[in-house]
Length: 403
Ligand code: SF4
Ligand code: SF4
Image (cartoon, rainbow, N blue to C red; front, top):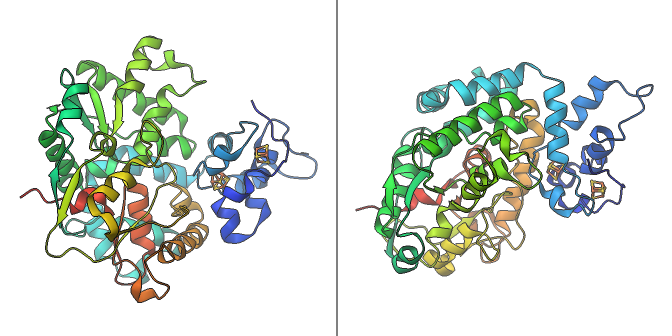
């Protein structure tokens, strides 16, 4: 495993360090304490080290900046796995068992008076409330031109399955899931129905490797049984989670029949926005004058580089779209919403300040975008929970009109 040389190249990317100024929360501290060199056990207790090092958003920004190839999110996940607590159990129930009930839970969260909610659950429940049926953005964007010819030239012979993820097959099935299928049908895709589960990303981050392996295996089995179709994915974290099944350095035989099948999985998985690249649209009545864009930490990339969702939205919305010059983490962090909601909230506040400072959005709060679009289910939940009054947040698929 790569070892930290304490160079500090990762520090500038860490949203936790930026929001708190606390070096002990930095990736360098985590790499030092949870990495191969470990700590002096005579000075620090393992439980204290675990409590500190697992305060991490798993955003992966440090990993991209590290010249040594240190993967702090992996170190943190291993530390969480070695020190389980009841919040992991809660997270596991939530993701693996309660998925089908998310709509019901979101309705319940919306009805709960705030004074009844324990402070430690407040942020997570607010995010859930943001997913309540009927609570999303109204549709105001008609797609007028799609790249049908480019799609047919590449994929005419392939069947396509949609990977919805936990939110897109649950509380947002009628907007995210159905709009994704509508756009793909208009594009000329031969759609087939495949039942997938969670991508497993959030389970791995939470230190639940066994559960992550099970959910990955179930997804591969479903894909194989369906004849190994192309996968269209519209949640940025799902794209990352599914890519990790066959990431360089992993033992692909754990999940796949052989390296050729793993290669087929990797090549056949595409962000929906990349398939729609070049689409044009027209806004209809009810469209806000200014639309903010939040780039997820795991933003899905176009084949030549660049954020696929942002490029698509820029083509559809032109100057109406406002994106900050530099992206900022929303502060979701999966299980961190439960283990350290205060930290998650502070990172969220910094993210909103960054969005409000986007060129063209104006400095005054009232000039901030009235709607913010993004392409990740975790970001939708976190930004809904932390949004300033009057600002609405949703996945870009919510604003697509099908009529
Ligand atoms: S994964 Fe993100 S929050 Fe965690 S240490 Fe790295 S940059 Fe900081
Ligand atoms: S984690 Fe990587 S970038 Fe950060 S201090 Fe260690 S070696 Fe340097």
